[in-house]
Length: 182
Image 1: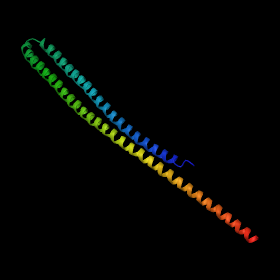
Image 2 (image 1 turned 120 degrees about the horizontal axis):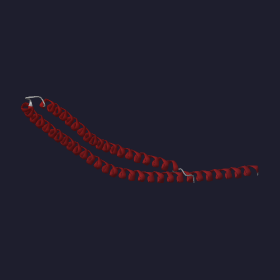
Image 3 (image 1 turned 120 degrees about the vertical axis):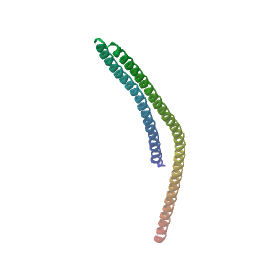
Image 4 (image 1 turned 90 degrees about the horizontal axis):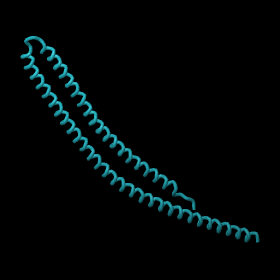
């Protein structure tokens, strides 16, 4: 008996591989999304440090300027008041800066964690659904192979019957030809 089911099993195997590769692509894209979120948080931390350094540099420049003005005769009282005001303003600015970045970081991390949780749930559901699909797919393959084997068996049986009928016709024809000759 020839193997008529090989193309069927190959087709089903290719379909399963395609489904599994689609699942892997989804998992990889969600992993890339997580990496982007992590990079965004790391970038935000770097941005905070850079901006803080710029504010501190600006404060140091103003402080140096006030030191230079403080050396002038009669400027010490006015400079002291100005220095207090400037120092307080920069402290408030740096505190606000830190608080703002802490809030942004926290919200970003919470958002990324929420997306990660949803992604994990999605992957879990996807895994469960694909397992069901692949089980049904294998069952369909088994049924298709079984039906094909039955049809092939029936076809071969019919072919044998046709060959038997052909042989009988040939035998009857030979007997009839012999009877006519005799």
